[in-house]
Image (cartoon, rainbow, N blue to C red; front, side, top):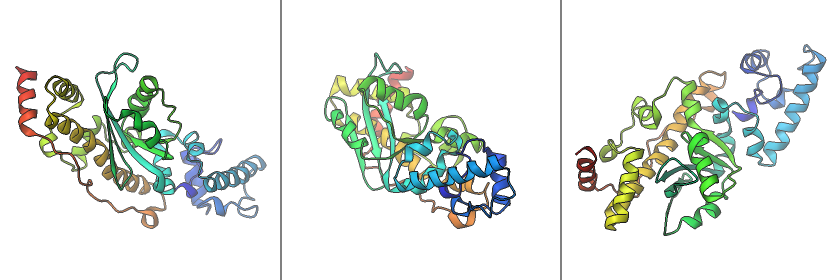
Length: 278
């Protein structure tokens, strides 16, 4: 979809982009002096320069250039062009303050392999791992995950970023990731009643007891977020494509979440829940 896009160019919003498509300009390669002759000299110059620069930036693999120019709700357009270098990312922490609290676990999924990082074990390996990817996908990562990582771990994280919170909100979905999941027909099984605060309780319980089953439950919850993000993104892309003339040609396959390599321990969840609610 990226090569069909014009809304990242100066002075071109959603309505103008639709008008360009309707006029027969279906992508950057259609922007020729003959095709844009009806437009004003200023718009012709912007289109010619913008299409040329866009082709060059895509050829250079510069996802960040597009990220800086696309509206957050349209960031989904980068996915297919950078699918070969995408990582779905989610973190768990001891709290919300990136200066005082710390990361407990991170799970990253690149469509092939699930990587996990745990405080006190291998968290220091995360910066080198995430640096391999050009495009990150999160839910609410613009507000929480990425700023928290920058503050607490000093990681620049300058990659392009699709925050599905904004994409899904533009489609009418809200209420947090799990609310969106339910609306889209995804279930979490034994993890259905685990939330972000419960993840803090799991970490504290693990630190007190040292029970690996508790850590595995926390990692299962963390991994469920990223695996469900990977399942939701094609659904969101296809829904957004239906707002364009390119839905039939560019539709992505929609698959369920990949296998979660971590197993939640239901008795542990029940024990901590009893303590939480008294």
